[in-house]
Image (tube, rainbow, N blue to C red; front, side, top):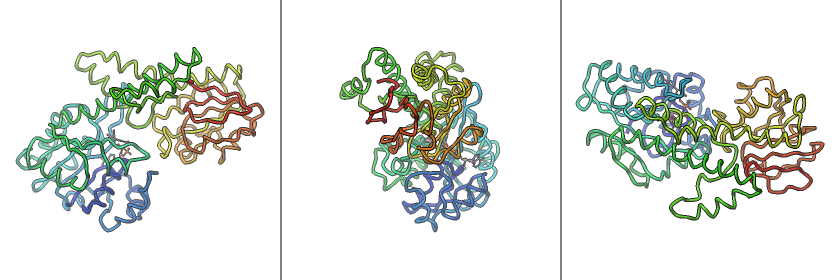
Length: 422
Ligand SMILES: NC(=O)c1ccc[n+]([C@@H]2O[C@H](COP(=O)([O-])OP(=O)(O)OC[C@H]3O[C@@H](n4cnc5c(N)ncnc54)[C@H](O)[C@@H]3O)[C@@H](O)[C@H]2O)c1
């Protein structure tokens, strides 16, 4: 099938290469010319396992352009995968969605299926995207074109794997033709297909992210109590997670969640609830725990290094999780900011995310090795569970004080070690 993908970021590009690998012909559209050029040269613009290999392997079946008309005229289906960031009040910013929708609307000539894959609050496909497409195109949904909602659940770092082996595919449609077409596109992926209407599909995505975020903040709150009484929360959660009603996943306490999805999606759901006259007590608490969690690492550091002003402090791990260079909402950002506010001299290292963090904190040091980062540091804070951090030699520090926010340090000889919740 001929498919165009609008927005060639984490979701759009991964969707594109995976569909291409299944034999579909893909045209990606992005406003970022540099990204488009890289994709056409077979270079992955983001770090994601197997993405480069798959781009090269599918060069014949996947191209990129900045020109919507090329993509729309050569495809029957369009997946909308642009970003849906937060506004400053936490509510969803639909400006990229609306801009892309207008471009698509202007170019619908014959019947076309528009599939919303971006995460959008319930009702957006029905109440905003569909009317906008009708207004701009002068055509009627359900007759001249159709709109569907197909949320994405992939995890960054494992995005290709998750796309190819999903727990379920959620398809939100309002007519049989679109439903059959979407099922045909996904033919070859062995997973249950859950068919609902677009608004339910939107709600499933938010509920899933809100529940996963809640599990993390819950584990962190219990972990904070455990720390006060000398209990390792990992011992507690291992047993708790054995209960089949709970499951062991997302109960790993630590410095909190980041990334481009959980924080913004929980914030958007809180704002959505508030617009409907509902105060979201539980989700407010989930965010509060997450906001304060990384700062607890500095409290632990100050137990051993009381005055951090003008002291060198090493931060290991900048990506919001391992296997990605994505730093969006990484817990290392509020932590570094707090260290700087307290006058510390910050030296930071990440295997692949330092370049991105330089855009946020251009004036801190980014040595090229762990050893250099630790050299003469008075404290070390570990924020990302990169495998290579599990066997660090802390000897470059004069008197190693290590605060582990990710339960990654196993050998603790000759160091002062504090686990965040253990
Ligand atoms: N990243 C994830 O792990 C993940 C997982 C599931 C769902 N989602 C959701 O998917 C959506 C996309 O997320 P992402 O992480 O891929 O975002 P991203 O920022 O990586 O990519 C978005 C892309 O859209 C492009 N873009 C912006 N405006 C455009 C326009 N008018 N026309 C064409 N291209 C345009 C940008 O240049 C960028 O390349 C969001 O709604 C997000 O919540 C993300």
